[in-house]
Length: 466
Image 1 (tube, rainbow, N blue to C red):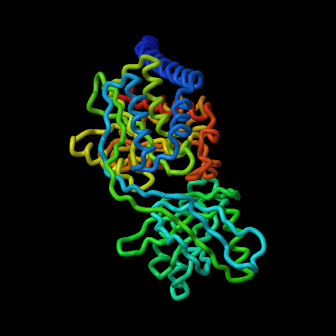
Image 2: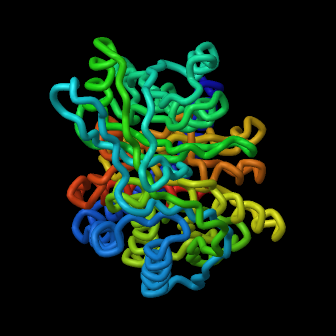
Image 3: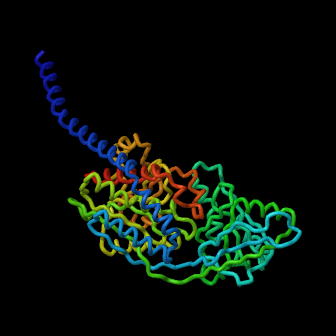
């Protein structure tokens, strides 16, 4: 009997010893849950990111690296970060190649026997060459892949190559479809030029059927002539393809673009110094440049203003970070990644350590999660926290899962921190990507604010880790 009583007493002692630990853990979780709730409430109530985005998209507009508009965006965002009472704000120099579109490009179907539409909806691709003032006139040949260009090399000389591989709408994730299709835009004109083509037209990178052509970068290798390279809208791509099934077609192409060479530009950086671990950096960022058409609202004005709003929300809630929080608005993501590469090099030279980095470059739609990319040797340091973080973020329909991060923060992976990417609903992203309709009207202020709140919540959780 005495033995049984002793066991009961021992059991009670163990339980009483555990109560303070359980209560402490519960209090910590409650504190975190309350702070995250406050983040979302303040973000949705104030919607500051939308106000900044309106100015970037509508008052400044398309911000191709090296352009006057890009420098206006640098000045504007520097001022905003300074107004938010960041501890430090500075511009980090980087060299960018300034490609200039010039006056409006055009593609016209030649031949009186053609009945119906003759003027096509097109945009020059970034890096395209120019025609003479009279333009380029040639027969068009349709291909479905880069391999087909090589296979039909003997037919291509003196022709206009039409890359018309369609978007795969069977994919649930639109970024997978983009990855499957985009090689024809990036490398198609180079391959066509290699075999003597005089121009190249590429089907726009979207699954939507409309009249909006999508620009984007195309790359010519050294020694390969920079021929005129244009994107054609999906409606007109199908129209062209149908005409080619009936007869041969000639096009007249006029482009006026030029490569204006290397320009000294800047990424914009703001910083709130950490109170306990200032040498451990948590970065939030997006790319400040955009293509020169439209307003670059989703790509990537949204990511920039969401990153700035992280500072705003932390300040608004009087949060004093333990680690250094750094907002980086990278220049030249669209046309060379020089901002991201320069930032990583400078950081490496300074022997900095990025504990974590979060990039937003997938549009300003409703956030669905945050995906992480990390060196496998580092993952064990962080994975034990993910379950707890997910339980705190589940009420806001946010989930942390393995995936990609972002092009500009990618070079920081070698520092052995963890990289995250904000993952919004992407179903409509490629309706606007690199087009004239990527303007403020395509962005909903609540959806944009939810993205800012998700990023801020993750920054907070990262900052609270031991």
